[in-house]
Length: 174
Image (cartoon, rainbow, N blue to C red):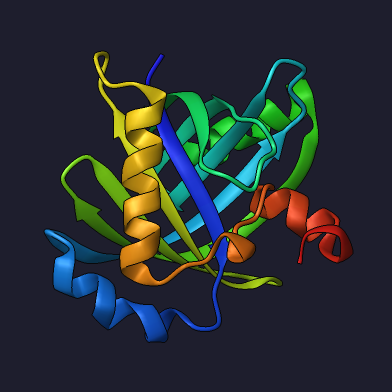
């Protein structure tokens, strides 16, 4: 399965970091609107991400709750009928919840930096260091930590949970 090392941090405002990240990013920002629907799944996390009525992706992933850089394993399958798939998955598994966000995506080699404005939560930064088969988890952690320093993030800003978990338990995570 594909893997990445990721972190998530609460930030004050997207605008305060976008210019800084643009200086060292190799491409971006790409503006995306995403609607994620999470389904009951006994062996990990299953979400349908819609970009539009005719574009989306089904994502299965496993990732520990940790406010340090963490390994995520995942599989992604594109779909061109996200609403039909959402209806089927809702009937089959039931919905846990949904997250809507505006995302600004920046790329640096094998790393994605997301500046997210999440409905009901505020602004966040995510770093995802995509690993190839020969790269270790510790390699990904070192890249994430290096980027945190470059951006000026502290360990105290890191969050262990997904946006859905934060929406469901705001007093626990934010």
